[in-house]
Length: 218
Image (cartoon, rainbow, N blue to C red; front, side, top):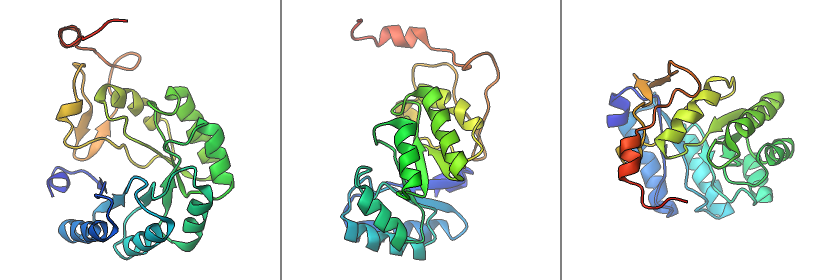
């Protein structure tokens, strides 16, 4: 409720991973925020195919935006079957090797409905933009997964602003534990993140903080 009250436009759940408890979480959160708030579900590969199918059908009733990473990305046969059985979009390719090359294969083979990428795990800004363009060519949504660390989130904001097929900017909340090492911060107002002003990546590092917290130098 705090997230909704602060103007954020959506929220993604990471439930515990027990199907019965997860379904209860999905229901209770939907009940709390109402039908007009965007919700996504990310069980982080906790399900078997049968469990993912059951969860997906429940999420469809609750009008969740997508079901993310219900199975391992490499379980392409399972994801494809799941996508064929469910109406809720299946979101994936977050950790699969091969960046934009594997993403193209997953789209062409009908493995997922929405693809994932980010500047931290998937090859930096260049690979992110290549992935976004591949998805765009197929008419597929490409969503950026949080990098967790907010200095990286500030970098990731730049490609997200250049993508026509990215609907959300994902970041952790609350993010105080991950927001350190820079004097510049993400400019989030009323649920929207705004472009920074300045040169290059527009990041000013807090070198006093960095030097005071350095534990080793390579």
